[in-house]
Image (cartoon, rainbow, N blue to C red; front, top):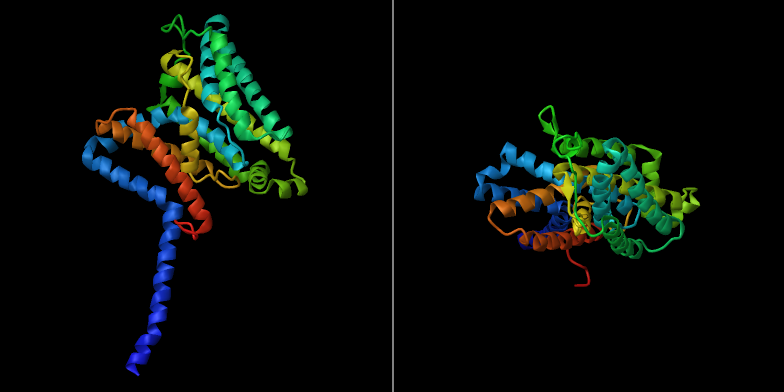
Length: 339
């Protein structure tokens, strides 16, 4: 009898072990990147105690603010089920334009003029993807090159600088502070709060999730898919214009390739935050977390004495890891059931 009882308990123990492994797999799939981030923080702090100092934390958040502002807009695009690979070259364009117009029109007119021109590019992309139903990857990849060419044409291949750097208030957006907090951090925080409210608490936000989750069903439900996608690209371009303003204000001058390559970092931050490449999921708050993860990891690598180009390799690894965890979270397992 004792042997029978013992054998009777074995299937239960096996089932409990299986459930335990599945639960662990789900936790790692959904929260694995946060666990990895925590491990990075501990490792970097042990390697260099200055890593989590107040000054270093402010420095990281401030340097991540421009990337973060761009990521906020791209979050809308990704949740709607599309991509935007043009944000890097678009940021270069907006930075060069506002610096050039600063000396010809003055900052009060230069800023709205730059926003109008940048958002016109966003409207063009939104029209092609939303109304003409063209593939967003192809459209934005093509626009990446087109806008880069437009920037070089506009600037004549030359970098831009403000003539009178001492006599302008334009630097407040990138260099100023209020209540002891750098203005770039305040812009990032306020914009995140506003867009988070729009995405999470308004009918428009619910339409974006519906379009990204199932565009056909959303259309049959009466949601105007084309208009929703078009609006997402407008929001993204407005965020890019804000980032360009901050970048121009930070140094009061810029190279015409200042945004080159940022599109991959922006996308990595958005995906790290939990937004799905398939659309229909993601939040502004988690995108902010994704931005901070990238910022702190890059800062930690520099404090360890590694060269800046190592960041490119690490960013690639993080993108692969994020996509893997995104797919794993949907199937509930870290590994493919076929493997």
